[in-house]
Length: 318
Image (cartoon, rainbow, N blue to C red; front, side, top):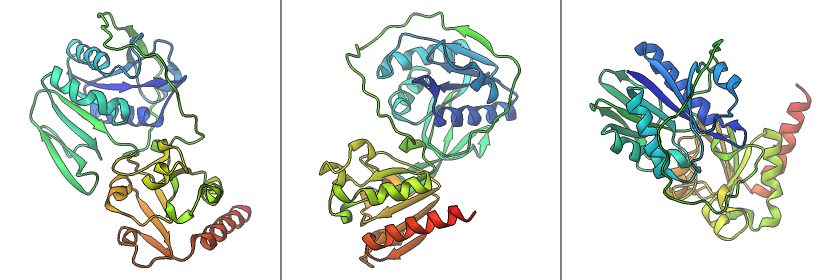
């Protein structure tokens, strides 16, 4: 039996979540003394990266658009059967959310999504997950012969484990496409929001898009990504790909700073797995303070510039 990891290759590189999945799968394979099989969606991928993180056997394929979840799931399922996969690991990003359940159904396996940590047990397989939009946790026991695990972002840091050689194999099965992609637009960001370790987010308390520089200035000093609440995105102050919450992107940064956000349950559902939450709000009764590790009751138009300046001074004095 083998552990199979799907590492998605996009725009000439592997995202952090792909390397997290590789690290996760490699650790499981090491404990089980199982073979580690990496699946990459581009034969021209960067082999040095995969070797640096411990991948010594890679199966590649091509010609399947990123958005064709049906074709991707069919192809991955075929590889799982061919390679006698027992545990299949993939990042629970947009692709993972689309194909995880399909793969499990095709291989008649169990499935756990939003996996939030290493397995508690491998025989039987028991993994921790977040449920109810991040408001609770649950341990999922999978008794099926095969299991598909959708791994949340920032569950563990990618860990290098270099190998000298990487055996390559091209997928030899047939690829049947279920859709035709006419146009694909990619958001270009210095720090992709789902992978960010630090995030600065703003809400309606900023009063208008003309004040968003306060969020950007602080984020720049912290080397952080920027995010927003749904009302901000709905008002077109910020693009929708920055919207975090139950109906937007779910994130797990080490630090989440929320300025001018009341903290409704819909927003908390996307951010409450952050390791440290800092809330800045002039309303001492704002619900967000109940979920915060640190809270500042004050006017964000005064607090944010002073915080940004303090960080600048701290960095200059290091």
